[in-house]
Each structure stands twice: as C-alpha cells, then as structure tokens.
Length: 127
Image (tube, rainbow, N blue to C red; front, side, top):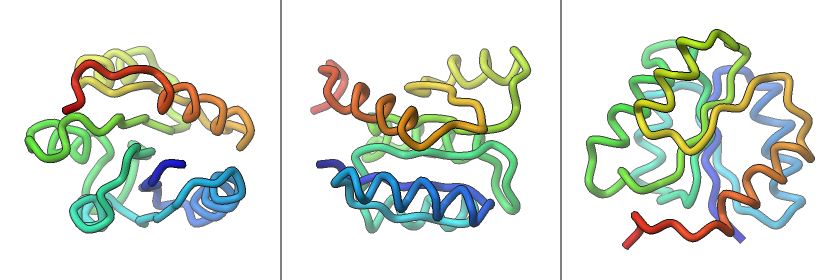
C-alpha cells in the first residue's frame, strides 16, 4: 500500500484519518502544521499528501507551492482537504496542480476511496 502524509492542525482529523487509512493498509504519518509537514515530506517520502488550507505558521497553499517548486516533491499527488468551500479556493488549488480538493467533513471511507483511485490511476508525470 501507500505512504500517506496528513498535514492538518486539527488533531481529531489527524487521528480519525490516520486510524482509518492505517487499517486500510497504508503507512501513515501526520504533521500539525505546514512547516512540520514539509520537514516530514523530506524524511518520510510520501506517495500522497493530504493538506489542510488554514494552519498556523504555513498555510496549505504555501505548502503546495513549495512542494510543486521542489523537483524532488513536485510529482507527489497532493489533495487539499478543508472546510473552505469557496470557488476561488477550489480554482486556486487547481491552478497550483493539486490532485483534488476535498471538503470537510469527509467520511473516512469516502476519503479512502478517493485516495485509492488516485493511487491506482497511471500518472504520466511520475518518473
């Protein structure tokens, strides 16, 4: 299965998604903010990243920007997972090259299905 990094300042979200995705066979790590998430990306080398938008120290958009600018992380599929449903956020995320925009609350089984689809789709940008 896949290595997934969850970057979210909400501890409950991290625990629920971590527990469910681990039971589905994935290896999960989590970070409480964008700074920690970027640091963990370098050491954990995830296959997929879930990131919230509103977080302390570094927003999810800034995390995505830095990931996409780095040749070693630019091809990792990143999903925004947020309670922000405004169209301008969705468009901004799409323009940044995210793999998907998921709005909270999202049930863990639905999230797992989205992740599994993303991991099984051929990605022509990966080396």
